[in-house]
Length: 83
Image (tube, rainbow, N blue to C red):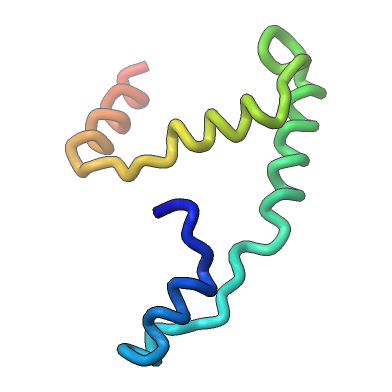
């Protein structure tokens, strides 16, 4: 599913529900922002930051992109306020 291109999805929906089709091409500059975050992490220094590589950062993003359920969010808020 992640490998589908937006253009392919739009082409499939064009005849069925044309209002759902848009020309969204993704978030412009997201790669630039990721590069900035990696650069800042390297500037911070310390173990795990100085030698941070792009692939590690991208893996971290992918591992943490799941949508949290309400109870999971509540647990996170509770644990952060307890600390």
